[in-house]
Amino acid sequence: MKREASRELITVTKTFFPPIEEYQRQVERIWGNKWLTNRGKLLLELEALIKENLNVPYFIAMTNGTLPIQIALKSFGKQGEIITTPFSYVATTSSIVWENCSPVFVDIEPNFLTIDETKIEAAITNKTTAILATHVYGNPCNVEYIEKIAKKHHLKVIYDAAHCFGVKYKGKSIFNYGDISTCSFHATKLFHTGEGGGIFCSDKKLYKKLFRFHNFGHKGHTDFYGLGINAKMSELQAAMGLAVFPYINYIISERKKIANYYEKCLNFLAIKSLNIRESTEWNYSYYPIIFESEAKLIEAEKKLNQHHIVPRRYFYPSLNKLPYVIPSSLPIAESISKRVLCLPLYVGLEQSQLEKVTIIINKLLN
Ligand SMILES: *Cc1c(COP(=O)(O)O)cnc(C)c1O
Image 1: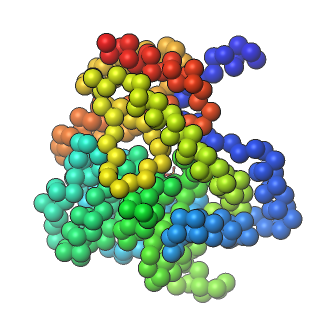
Image 2 (image 1 turned 60 degrees about the vertical axis):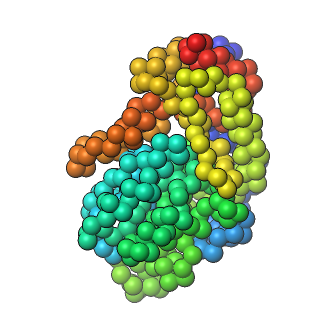
């Protein structure tokens, strides 16, 4: 057992586990209520807590962070072309294809790694219906610019804000921007419910539509508004959410310390870190570094692996290279995705481990 502990892997992230008694207390409430799903008491409490704390008007908790993207696309009722980013997790693109829409990729901005807003207009055709962009690593897109383009061309804006719990832009939760924002509460994300996610919007009519969609289209017990799917979050998921939620500020501040250490101690002559957009209160959800070449990245990854350190290539490949999309060329996204590596960043990463990661990388770059 001792040997196991000393060889414990330093992974890119580790799930935050609240004290088990606090989770048990929530689970006991479920037993008391004898109610496991279909929008139970714990789920309603979690939704209220999130709305109040983030100051967002409408929010629906869902069973993961992918269904909200699909539901968002479905809610606009049109197929057509969706302008999107190639630099994100696969769920951003797969949701578009799953909904029988066509992804049209626009390259990314090399400093912020979000969609290059200045290249969006050139990609708009008469088939374009929406823009689906990712606030990648919790770094906001240029939301003002995107809103202007969307208004001018009558397009909807969906943000995949899976990485954004706790992020504020210009003093407001980032979930307040765009027609719809989606989030993931997966175990690897900053705030989590094991599996889970949710959808945010500011329009009451749209909220009602999204709500029906996430519950089979039900209108009472025997009638239906229309088509729907099941994206409901269960009470067991909500219990984890209620146990994790009180720790959110602690989680963010612990991660900030680690990110600050990397920022201070890594040798940035041969690597680059992420630029965070101005007026952003960031959540330190990832710590990506960009190498000068893929060869250097692979060398670093190998070396780290030898020391039981497992960073991850978030996000590789560039999504325009997926086997189910029409091939296109996006030089910046393709180049960055080959050279970006996310370093270990999680509550409980010890100082000695952090030093080890930093020393190995610096040595390699010298
Ligand atoms: C995690 C993630 C998702 C999917 O969320 P799940 O909860 O795993 O379904 C979608 N988009 C991005 C950018 C993600 O990182």
